[in-house]
Length: 328
Image (tube, rainbow, N blue to C red; front, side, top):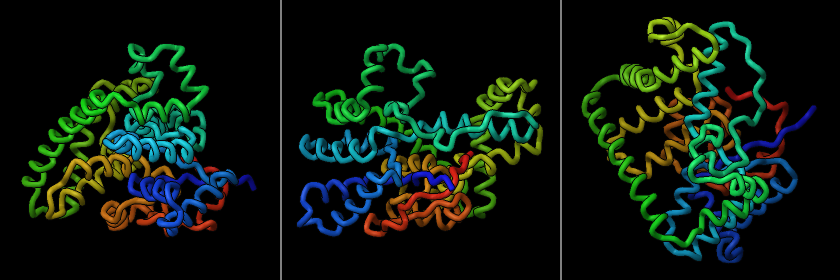
């Protein structure tokens, strides 16, 4: 049997714990034991540990240069510069395959790690999309391809505080707009059943993505111009059948049902969970989204092991798995 490396996703707190272990193994002996397990599995080729946009953003937010550099060094060393692709790209591929399956169109078999990229900037957008044409020369792209770890480290620890702070400011402004919409939706749906709130969120997701869905259908050669062309059966099932959409609605609805106010940090954590949970083998993250995912039985549905501490990682857990599944 051909064994494959498991994919381990670490949230930012888990990365910080590993960075502490690398800094002082005596003071942080338990964390160092976990770091040893991770590094042994990595060196044996048993795991891949990609970064997400959330990881990159949180590291760039660290204001103390020494701490930022140390954390970045640990992240680029263990990840090797490999990242989870942007939500938009993952959603596009999942939708394409689901539409093709439902309409009897044959698609080429996807590789088992199609959602990972060796280009660390593809946490934001695909290079092929043209999003970086005005800011990235062919020479820079070639440098990133040849030296992914070095270039990612330089990006994360850049000393131009003005650039970093402006990026944080813009992200926070966009997050605040989303938080405002979530608060309004929470107020509208107060007292409604979980089932009704899930249906309402599914409808919103479809409305948000309808133009994209129609365009993808046309790319597959389908005569789709209007929402009705998709068909009632496929239209109703897309959100529940496309993993990244299903995880989003399950987590967002449960997050909005909590009594405490949703924060910008919650949005970043949820964004990473939405992308990672249906695709990776193991997630180490804070209790909130682990618990929400377990409530929705997402870990069972997608076969993802959810942990709340790096101390729970074991050599046996990180051993390579069987045949590579195509996660679509």
